[in-house]
Image (cartoon, rainbow, N blue to C red; front, side, top):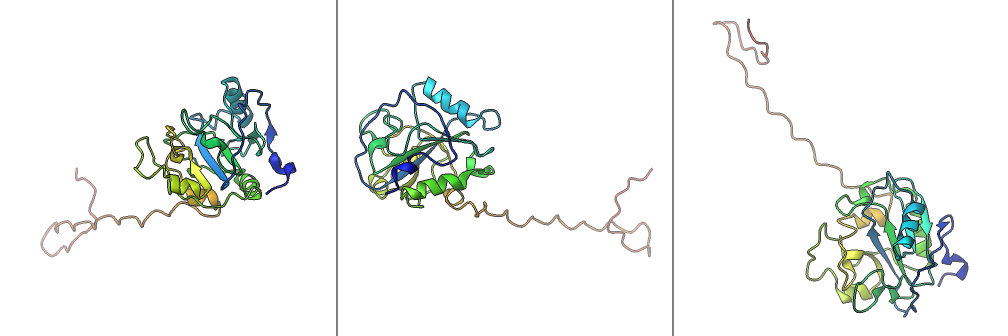
Length: 224
């Protein structure tokens, strides 16, 4: 496991979270859970959103702005973001050697993996240091609420790795939306290139003006 000194991500701005509910991490496969704040990354800083979470009695480990690259940290990796993933029942935020919750400034219906993803590599290196495997067992998160039957599979959750909030067993969250896990975990990959453009139809030759004049295939000017 990573050294205690790595409990705070290097380079992240620290925001005091006095309302953390605590909770003992129970051991098991390490995980990272990505969710969205439903706010505009062009208008809000990571620090401002982190402070707003604290004011609302909420918490997370990281708040990240993928447009600017700014990252703020509220909790050390060794503390559970208790109560932040499930409204009732088993507290999934306490499961795993670590269960690191990342609030991404963005909207569910506008996948943040279409943004520049500035500052992502330091986050991934920090998660790597806590042995969170770079895999996404549950596949692409759904675009909207109304989850596939096996989206919140206990079996997949038990494998550890990266998950969307909507894929946490028992969660009711819609975020992070239909992000592209392959681009998130490998920033060198880009969204699939669009297919070839459909060529315009060939123009139909206009009839000859008079016998023997020949075809004039691109006649377009109106006659006076």
